[in-house]
Length: 146
Image (cartoon, rainbow, N blue to C red; front, side, top):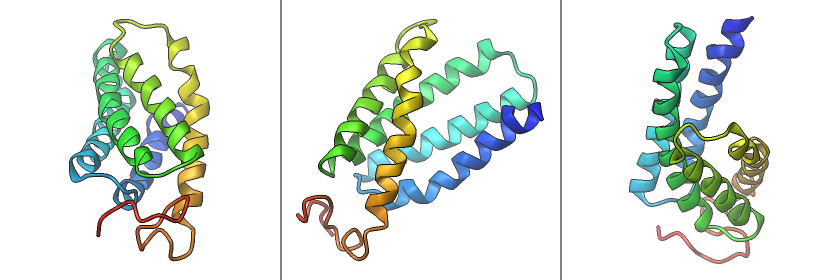
């Protein structure tokens, strides 16, 4: 069971996020940051699964959070309302934590709440019939050039 929680489950969750990165509005460079975060996080999950010391893989994982923060902030900025607010707060928390050497895990705790809320909001946004594929987002405005 430790392998399931320590490596396989997080890898599966990250693999499911590739289509989300592709679907959200973001400049190409920000989308690349999202993919980069997923690759780094998958690699560090595999490192943990294989017994690599946390002093080696965790700093790499936190470096990947910088890419995650860039993608989340950029894609959140493209929409309005709660998705934008929650996304920007999430990106700020991830980004700040990444730059605190041996920072307290308590700084990262808000992300544990903000991540699922943001993904729920993003899922709701992506399932709006027709609006999203045509570039209309919360508020009905055209915000993403085709």
